[in-house]
Length: 295
Image (cartoon, rainbow, N blue to C red; front, side, top):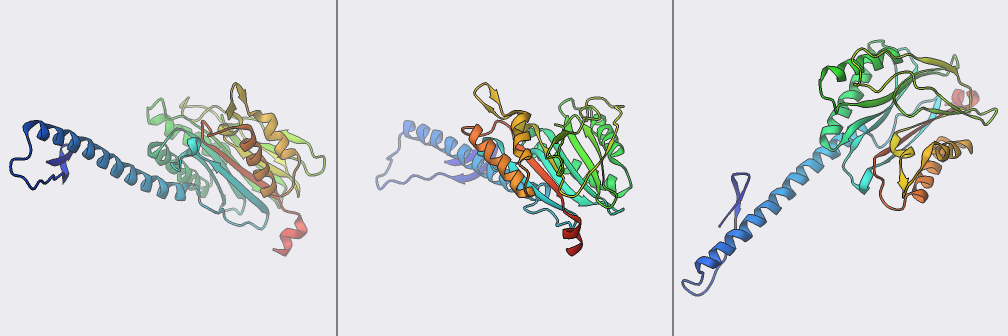
C-alpha cells in the first residue's frame, strides 16, 4: 500500500504472509488506514525536522552564541524561549560598532513566533545595521523601520524596539524607544536605578509616527539593562514578574554577567514551569577608564 502525504508518495507499506490469499478486503481497508496514519506521521516529522533546521540557522544568525568584545564595555545576555522550545521567536538583541566608532546596542520584540517571526526579526536586525552604516541616528532608524513595517500593510506586523548609541569618550548615551519596555540605568556613584523614557509608539502601528531621542550622561561603572516584555510579563498564577523585580536584580550591581544571571535566577524562582512568552535580556556595563586603557 503506498504511503501518500499531500498528494505524493513518500514510501510503501508492505505486509507479507506465507499463506496464499491471506488478506481479506477488510484487512486491506485496515492496511490503508494504517498507511494513511503512518504517512501523516512521517511527513509531519520531516516537515518539523526541516523547520527546526531552518529555525536553528536563523537563531544562530539573529542571536549569536557570543557578542563581539569591546574595550569600552562589558556585555552579557540571556535568551529564554517560551514553552521550553528550541524554536526561536521574535526577540532579538544586537551590539555592534558604528562607522563613527560609537557602540550601538539594539533590542526588539517582533509579534509572533516560529519561522515567520524569526524571518521578520532577521530582516529588522540587518535593516537596523544598514541604516546605522548609512549614518542614521537612533530616532531616524526607528522612523525608517516603522515606515518599512507600516508599508507592508499587515496589521500583525507590530514591533517594539530600542536602540542606543554609546560614546564612552564623551560620556553620552543617545537612545530612542519605540514602544519597548524602558531601559534601566544603574548609576555607579549613587546606586540609584533610573528609568529611560519611551520616545515613540510601537513600530508599524502608525505610518508617519515621529520618534524623539534622548541623550543622557554615562560614567564608568554605570550599567544599562535592556529586556523584552517576556521578562516583566512572566506570570505565576495571577501575579506578574513586573519591573520591580527587574530593578532589584539590577540594583545590586556587579559585573554585566552578575546582573544578567541574577535576573535569570529571579525568573526561574518566580515562574514554576515554562514561560508564556520569549524573554531576552541584554546588559551593558561601562568599563572603568583605567581598565579600558589596559585592553
